[in-house]
Length: 411
Image (cartoon, rainbow, N blue to C red; front, top):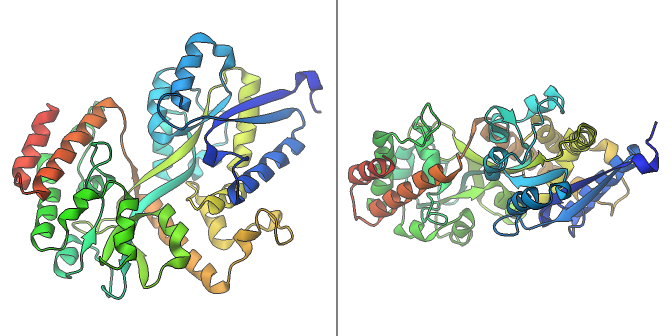
């Protein structure tokens, strides 16, 4: 029985523009339809989205801290956070756990990295709803097969690029992927940042050999993000490049002579790093928590999560949702052409086969994806590693010298 109007719950959700039902285009239309359907099925719950900045001063995390300090009754019920912000928010006492509020089936269906990214000190404080990973694309006119190992990269002759310039002074995921593939650790048993000097040196040695052979151009130091690598790849200046799944999905229809593959590692071990955004619970009142859990469970239902991620060209971090994307199991949402989901279904059979192949590839990558540790001490680790990368690629230090210096700076 619906609650009386006076007892109806209004859930406030702080979000950023890309994750809003007011966003122009297919993504906003899909989300607006899902929100409306939920409210029609739950007339005692109203959901209000409030737009905020994603990061920095005036961003969601900053405003949570400020509001908690001066006007806690004005806090929202749910927030959208970058997964790297979950630890800080949870340890500041701003978030409540989802563990006992959502079904274990949903939690267990998340890919391992998504579960890990959402947990802080053993509690699930974030439910990832969209993700991206890093992988390889290569020009099939320049390479007959993808390089799987370092030896392939160094002997097949085609130029290979990735971001090596660091992002705001922190080492790129491209380096950490190689290091993790060697079994390197980023945290010790106590959770403090730690590095294996020999493994750092091995990755740096690969970088130096690639530079010396002309396979890895020194210009990789000018690439700070994956998108920086995209123009040289599109203009066929290089044979292979790292790319984000979002960029590949966005431009896939325009690409020619391009295939995808895992990032080549020393022994061909498949590793990538996943990033994403999560729903986090702020509400402390049990009734509001229950309503929030109902709403988020609805948005994360496989068909809904698949439809929204397909609209925004990101990757759902839930297995059943990824399967729904692959097979277009959206029958319950069918409408006449021109509706919010018609762009998802209007695909030629050849493209559907391509989508299925890429989705199957993504599943393998997502099962192996790792989480990049975050926090002030991890930022220090990332900065010393970036200095090592720069010193080796510019010839200012040998791999062994740069690795030793990086480890020494952590101590």
